[in-house]
Amino acid sequence: MRILTNKFKLLAAFLLILVSSGCAMMDRGATLSGANEVPPNSSTASGLSKIVIGSDRTVTGSVAYSGVTATAAHIHQGAAGTNGPVIVPFTKTTEGTFVPAPNARLTDEQYASYLAGNLYFNIHSAAYPGGEIRTQLRPKR
Figure 1 (cartoon, helix red, strand yellow):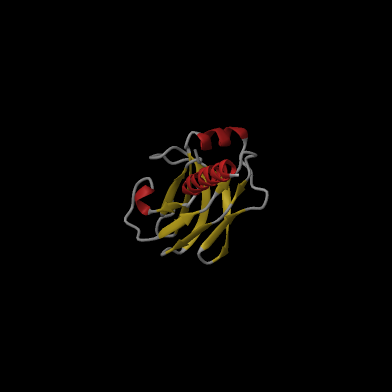
Figure 2 (cartoon, rainbow, N blue to C red; figure 1 turned 90 degrees about the vertical axis):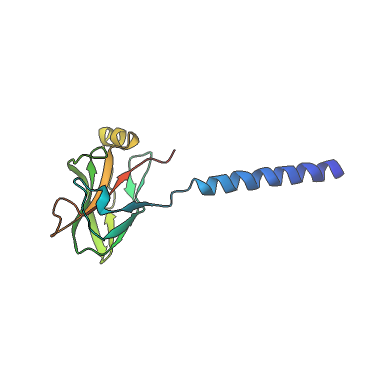
């Protein structure tokens, strides 16, 4: 009985470590800023991306923002430090929140770009029509 109890304690400790390390790897979101734009700008606006790109190429989640009167928001194809074309438009659901269209999905080529770190999300405004705040989308590893 004592051996069984010790094995149970060891298993419980292992599971606790496993769960704790898994929580540390959970996506906490990515911050959008003007410093990430190309070219960088001094906007004081900010945002938090909770975009999820599934292995089935679906795009879900949301982006919350403040300090900007947003005119549009999109996922673009482009490496850090470069600009690229819009590939997934987002819709403003409320002031301060954008979401992708239902059933939004990347193509195989776009998904490969995502895996390589070559997609970004940005929010546009009248003051910065090319993009006011931005974050590079990085796959969870």
